[in-house]
Length: 338
Image (cartoon, rainbow, N blue to C red; front, side, top):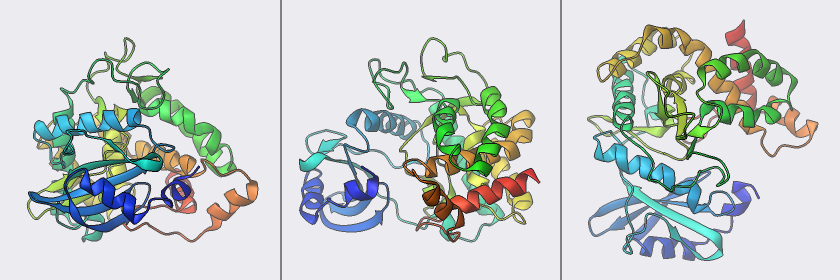
């Protein structure tokens, strides 16, 4: 079952029941994407309620990102903390297989809604640097199951692991498959361990590696008037920290990239190191990130006609500014190669 079908059965009564688990009322919709997000009001302030379905994500898949988010918030990163329910649960189960979590609410526009200025991108880079610095001391609670499948060792998937799981989807489109073949040696070299983190094989990865946000686009960052707050911690991934920076600039127009990327990196380096080697790799990492996004777009797409329809669909973006057009991503790859 895809997410649209699964979440189409989320009724107003179920949403209200979820809000009551946090003692919240005055519930209003915010974003009806892969997670259905609602803003709700409690006696101590507003919260964001995030609804999913157990056919899409199990409690075992939700718990590790919440643990990571709680850790980096306590360590000072600009993120919204996960909030326990009245029963002190971070995850509440509702009837019909629905699951709900809550985080603190933050007012302000997404970065994708603001003019992309040097000052804004420097603040974005600083927020990413603070996130990575806060995450260096994080280790999963012993006994935490793997968020992909309990049979896998470790807890969090590596970027290289995700890449190879996406390869069968990339093979459905000839041009994307060609880019995947071209970029796979780089991912195998730079993408971290073959499996998941942490386990005996992957604990020793050094400078430049760590737990990343996994989808750090401008639409997943909010300007609160003083600093950038990073949101939407669905799938933290272990690998090169530079992949978060690559994702941050992936959607920038080509004419703005030379101006804004240095400010993003300056902001990042105001918090911690970022080597010249990783900076040199950023353009290719950005291509890898685009290829991975395009491949996962084909997950669940079966026929050649469906693939062709995606490839020729109008270029568009979602309500948070993310590039969601398969064709736009493949075009980006071809332009970058040329």
